[in-house]
Image 1 (tube, rainbow, N blue to C red):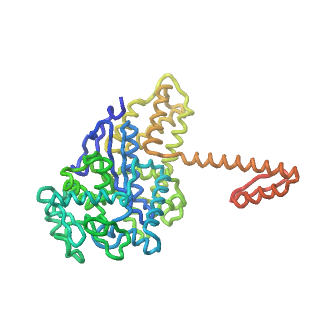
Image 2 (cartoon, rainbow, N blue to C red; image 1 turned 135 degrees about the vertical axis):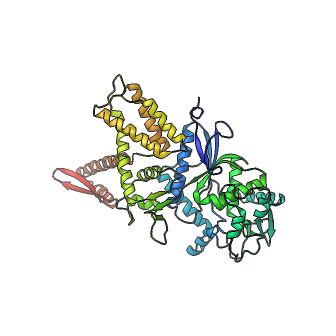
Image 3 (spheres, rainbow, N blue to C red; image 1 turned 135 degrees about the horizontal axis):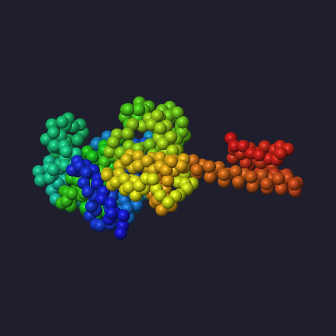
Amino acid sequence: MKLFQEQEIKIYNSLSGKKETFTPITEGYVGMYVCGPTVYSNVHLGNVRTFMSFDTIFRYLKHLGYKVRYVRNITDAGHLENDADVGEDRIAKKARIEEIEPMEVVQRYTVDFHNILNTFNFLPPSIEPTATGHIIEQIELIKSIIKNGFAYEVNGSVYFDVHKFDETNNYGVLSKRKLDDLIHNTRGLEGQSDKKNPQDFALWKKAEPQHIMRWPSPWSDGFPGWHLECTAMSTKYLGDHFDIHGGGMDLKFPHHECEIAQNKAAKGQAPVNFWMHANMLIMNGKKMAKSTGNFILPTEIFTGNNPHITKSFTPSVARFFMLQAHYRSILDFTNNGLLASEKGFNRLMDAVKGIDTLQTTNSTSFNVLDWKKKCYDAMNDDFNTPILIANLFEAAKHVNQIKEGKATISAKDLELLKSTMHTFVFDVLALKDQASEIDSKSNKLSGTVELLIKLRQEARANKNFNLSDKIRDELLEMGIQLNDSKEGTSFSTN
């Protein structure tokens, strides 16, 4: 029996506004799509938090034995400034400013995105499609929407007819917004007179002469609207009806609302059973913004090179900090919060390492099976990582009590405690004991340098001074200085 057959997961569904029991469309299989980054700048910490939430969900579903197809896209075209139907493509703008090709911008920041996520110990998605790699699919989707009477073409651009759609459907089903309210709150348009209504959104935009990124279509040389790519790619790889669609809270409207409308207009059905939204990351009680200086890059956390923090922190400490808040809660990123998380993280890692040193007896003074169930119950309750972490600290307390002789554990329960701790700490939460990794690397470095010192001594004994000097000089270039004395040769690093 698979674990998922024993565990009942409840997920907060943004569509219904309540927790619902998760039952996949096909037993044993989960299709999950998450909106990925627009690769025109370095990935910011708020993005990292969103993707970390879904990485943890991905890991837990896999742990339960589900076969998960996790699709996370790369937006490399068609995303205009301010998410509007007018303006300049963000990638093309960056390319113009830096005087490079748009695909150079895409490559640079896609590599940065992957590097940062790898540093935080993310699993790669099953499929990572790009918008530019699916232009044909997007064009075909537009054709279907036009054929079904929910889109219109004007001067080479194609727009989704929100009013027409709302006559037979509910535009606002996800965000709970009413079209009448949207009409009332819409200001006068500038440069958007091609639209029938202000609420209509672009499916295809005719490219102006200066627009670099463009593709041929039945309507014009142009580019697809931002909302369209996710509808095209999610349904291509997960089918017209799939289990989970996730993203940041800021995408609920209009992006995800438009995805639902597009899918219904093209295929006649809602695409997703569960809509999941991760909440925002703020800093020192305020929105992160480069314009105010209230922001921090992921790399600055690792180096400590930011005025908002007093020291450097490992990626696992930063990950631990973010997982201590529920994914649907606003998280305030502060130096004090990181410092507290570092202490907690070290305490947890000490307990995990301490399990191997415990002495066993014939009895156990706490119920390990009940504790294990509490760990699963936490993750089954809408992936509640803060409660899971609290349960892990409960186990850490018992480990310390056993060490001190104030509690006991049997060999069977010790094995269960160890395997469960390892499962949730390393496999599900994806934390790493990076202090041990640093010590291991330091030991390997010491061993390597000691070997080179020995080879240098042999070279000097054989009067091969050229080789002796070369070893010394090349080590110095790498920041390793050899210190010769009567007692022998030692080394120091710069």
